[in-house]
Length: 312
Image (tube, rainbow, N blue to C red; front, side, top):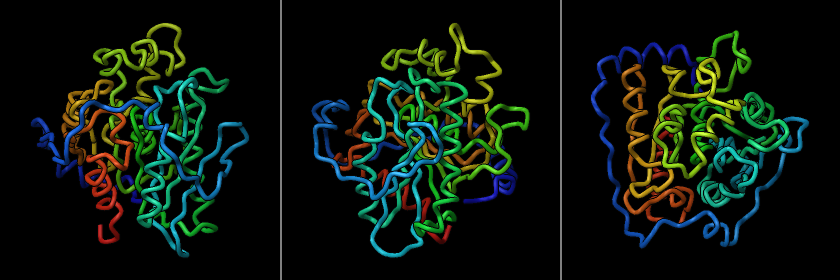
């Protein structure tokens, strides 16, 4: 966890001229015949978290904590699942495979559930209030469970990538925002996996696989087009710069969130002075990025390890 103001100042100076197109780095690692679906992924056996812990009073206000062996303190990944922000799609189980792998490699994982579109308290503001409360609850858990919040990374997949990036951007929210918290818990870095990083861009140029544009509007609590004031509070692209290192990872053959969307977001982030990098992984579609048996996973875990390194 790092102070947001110090990072904002340093990166704004260092990145002031970084407005050229980002290098989207292909990472080799085998081949795939076709991208897998989430239903194929979920057919596999899954391990279980060590404990489920409520961070609020709602039925969906809980997280699942995966703890490595030993007393700690353990580095932490706060993880947010995707599913197009919709109640009809699977929740935390989508991230269980990555959580198990990270736990086996000495990293504690806090896998957050939250209200989504179709749930009573889902969409704006409830979805975002849940994410904020779930993240900040790590301060309560740190002592009892041996968590090192000075080595903290946020990550999320697809719609969860949007929410992880938003959680990392909370320090840029104005006090007048309905989502403002005085002292948000911020990470050392954030990694989005096929993340929907810019809501306006996805609404306009997404491929329709998440029900956009209607789903994006519904996320903002709108029956018609989302209000600009809401976009300003919930789209990470609108909150730039927020002074957290950002790794934007895509699958080169992703049919749901194509890599060009990540590239465009990184252009915006760099132009705002952020430390941001786009990475496109060969042999990866959408769900390969949350499959630890896929060729792409070692490169993703290496990025997590780098951000968690104690010497940073």
